[in-house]
Image (cartoon, rainbow, N blue to C red; front, side, top):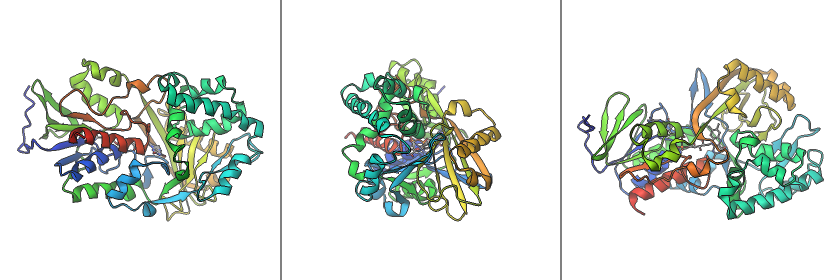
Length: 454
Ligand SMILES: Cc1cc2nc3c(=O)[nH]c(=O)nc-3n(C[C@H](O)[C@H](O)[C@H](O)COP(=O)(O)OP(=O)(O)OC[C@H]3O[C@@H](n4cnc5c(N)ncnc54)[C@H](O)[C@@H]3O)c2cc1C
């Protein structure tokens, strides 16, 4: 079968980017800045991918509870160059909260050594009713060894789970549940026994030299509205094109090489360079058709994806007195926050919750997931907020993340493939910031650098 594009849009100089998540948008932005002709094709009706918001059966939702970490570099730099003012886009939080069903009090931890130094110090030294000094001290050998091994032998650290590594280094049960669990499962949903120790330490490692930048930003609106749509507009303004509702069904590739892409509606678009910037599973599906036998793609094609499940609700009362990041270890609640004063204003109460153990929840009906969410909130002392819920949505995704389990790190592919003109971008590709917004941006920039030959 000929894979010659059948439409009149022959454009040999053009780069096609498949996917308008942060990886695709960051790649496109770097390319248009260098004067390249770029067409971004996005399957959904909105840009942003996992950093998106949309209306789900009458309720404004997001892919899930997202926080902008102060030590990110590539993402804020990109946004500033695109003319997006971080002070308009974010509200900075200086503390976070951990609630455990068996604790007498919740723990409050300062995050910001510059703007809230006393709260930060007292969080470490205090909170003794939440976690005893001896339990805190049991973390020291674990942290020291983990950060050291993360630098000296990352491949070996990736072969062990956080749970096994913590047990090897004598972390107490209380410290494991109240500190390690929020900082692992609370962030990337996986239970401790399935969570790579390398992913745990590697995420925080870049923050150590930038500790003065450590704080957490909440978005001042839905992420499409305040971040990704303005980024797409900046790309368009610089001469690029961004098409939504344009799902790519296959790459046009034959013995003569890469020719372009075909959309689900049969439209074929030519390009000599194509960046696959979709989520992991879609990327694997697009590549499998042509490269399943190719040695370079084998490890990546065997890289497992992990699901995510979130619960979002509106209520007559705010769930928490403050909009700040909160963790619920020991329950199905990972990290969550009240958002009625930040991201989704104009409602008396609005909360977003990432649920842990998504493998267990992904196929359950919404009603059952919701019952477990409510139970988790009640268990950590938030029954009052739960009783005033007026509407909820369960938002889930089955194939967006690479699984951050032991042994998976070497399967992540580089952005440059051995196929001429074919590049990959996405948080799953090889970059140091794991499955984060920062990682997605770095991956897009690496793909762009490959195209620009820099
Ligand atoms: C619940 C949740 C909480 C998170 N919390 C945080 C956080 O607090 N901090 C943080 O830094 N990160 C967080 N993340 C991770 C962050 O959202 C991702 O790492 C990042 O958005 C990934 O961007 P991406 O461009 O690689 O992929 P995506 O955002 O998944 O973008 C891929 C795009 O490709 C499109 N696409 C797929 N197939 C096709 C096709 N065939 N044709 C055309 N387009 C296609 C998709 O529609 C999508 O828009 C969270 C993610 C989730 C889901």
